[in-house]
Length: 342
Image 1: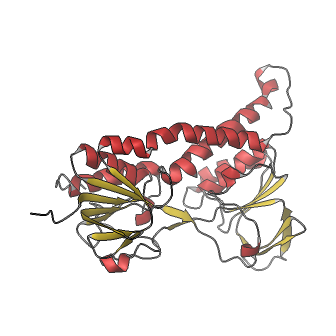
Image 2: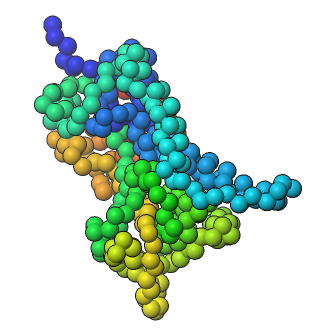
Image 3: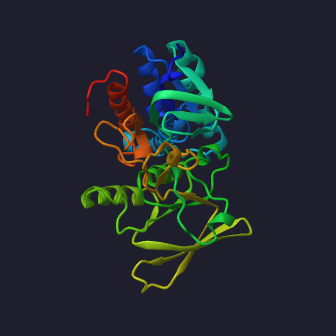
C-alpha cells in the first residue's frame, strides 16, 4: 500500500527557523524535506543580517578603538582611509566559514532531503517546486522577511542600498544617508561612521529606536552624535533623485511648518522596516489566512490550517533569529512529537 504522503514534514525556507526544524525533524526520525528558493541555505541571518552586520561592526569598532589609543596611555594613532573592499572580503570570509555548518551536505547527512527551487502550494498538503509535486503531512512555512521600501517618490531611479546589498559594496562613501532610525539603520550607520563616512540619519518618528524607552533612545542618540552622525527625527523624506552621481534627498519636518531642505550624499541606505515574504507561495490554494503583516499563528505556531505552521519573521511577531529557532522547536514538537507545547 502506497503512503498517503511523501514526507512527514515539509519545510519552506532555509533560514534560522527552517534549518532548526529540518535538523530536529530528521533527528526525530521524521521523513523531512527542506525547500529553499535561493541556491544556498542560511537565510537572512547568515547572508544579510546577524553574521555580516556583526562582522562589520567588529571591524568598525576596532578602528574606533585605534583612534582612541591616547585615552589608554598609548601613542596617538590616526589610521589611514579604509579600503571597504578589504573589509567586505573579511565579511565574506566569515560567512563562508559558517556556511559549512548550514550546507546542503550537513542536512542531508542528518537525514533530511534538501531541494532548491520555487515552492507554490497546490492544496493544503501539496507543494509544486519547479514542476515537481511534493506532498507532506505537515508543513512549516519559514520564508522570513525582506526590506520594506517606503513609497518615496524617485526611489526607483536611485541606486539605493538595503541590508541585502550593503555587504557587497566595495567603495566607502564619503557621505551616507540612512533612511530609518531602527536597529538595522542605526547599527550600520554607526559602523560606516566609524569606518570614515559622514553619516546622516533620517527618522520619521519623534525619536530613534521608536519602540524603546525614551531614556535609552536618548543615550544611543548622544553616542551616535558624539561619533559624528547627524540625526533628523520627526522628519519626513519627501523625494529623492540621482543627479551627476549624487543622491539628493528632500526632507521636511513632520509638522509641515519647516521649509523643505535637500541633503546630498554619495550613497543611500534604506532601512525603513521589513515585510513578510508571502508573495508567490500560493497560500490561498492552501487556505492559509494571511495579512500584509504576515501569517497569524496561535501559541503552538499553527496557522488557521491545523497541520500548517508559520515560524520566524513570516508570522510578523518577533523578528529575531533566536525567536525563529525557538518557534521552529515549538512547531516541531507539536507536528512531529504530537506534544501540545506552547
